[in-house]
Length: 215
Image (cartoon, rainbow, N blue to C red; front, side):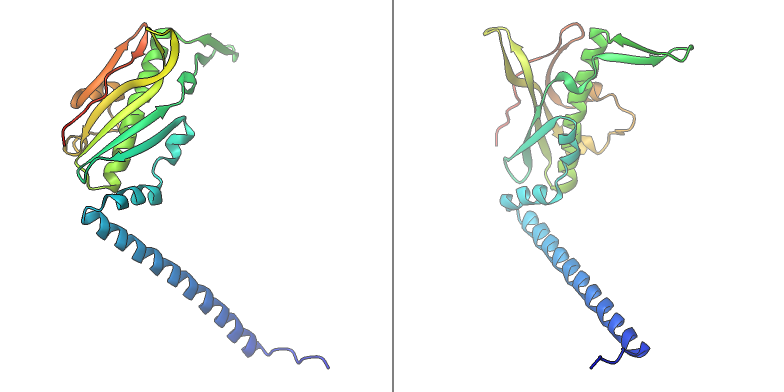
């Protein structure tokens, strides 16, 4: 025998039950997520360094930076300082040609002057370092961040291309909070901090010593 069709009232009740169950599941998930964040914040406030790393993993603040060619690894020195190493893949992140539209409507493609190219690459390295610092300061209650940007350069001693530090900067939260990042030149901004950086317009960036601090 065929089952009798559900009445409009029964259909409405069934739809209400489904909506309720869905909303209850969403609420339970949000409550669970909230409780996890509270626990994470509490552990960080109490200075448990393992949760510093967990917070970075949860927030994943460097995803966009990885897309443009840089990988980030962190070392949690203390509750007040983090060391971040940025692996700059290579100089291909900066185009070696400049393009412009002529009055005739044709596209003009020219090799970029080496000096201009080197300046853009330097700005890229510096802006990546500042971005990493800002992301960490936004998540963790640290006072200082040492950022070491590492890239492939020619070792003059061995004649081989090797991965070496191109920039080492000690970012201080108090100073970072005073900077208007929408108006700065990334390379010039390094003057606000203790910074090791070698640069010549004709040669580009050169290897430097990384900053080391006590404690």
